[in-house]
Length: 124
Image 1 (tube, rainbow, N blue to C red):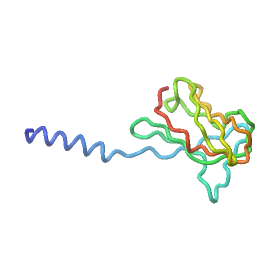
Image 2 (image 1 turned 90 degrees about the vertical axis):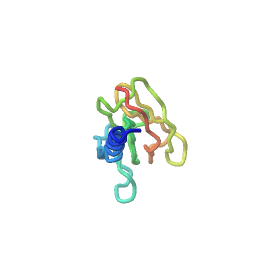
Image 3 (image 1 turned 90 degrees about the horizontal axis):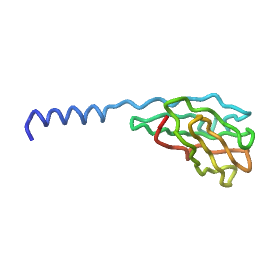
Image 4 (image 1 turned 120 degrees about the horizontal axis):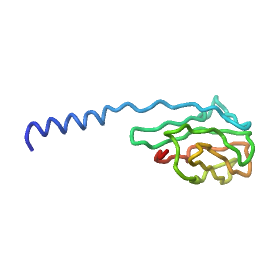
């Protein structure tokens, strides 16, 4: 490898290694959903990393079963509906999202719902 190619490669690697990640974004919660307990648990937030993967975190409670917890904006959405298994009040539940951006909870009990299982490559 030539010195010039080596320098070019180092510049490329350094630029990737020094990339700044996006900050977590706090969405507006919908349909009666609220953060579970802000003093001891992560609040509902999302972010997209430098690889285009959307990550969601936090715990929510109190909303209506089957309704949207919050809406992801364009650029943070899937092109089609996908389902994610989650924990809800010590039972299994399902979170779903798709091209509308709504993150929906299909759980038996809304005493608390973990959002940590939602992670996907943004498509829309």
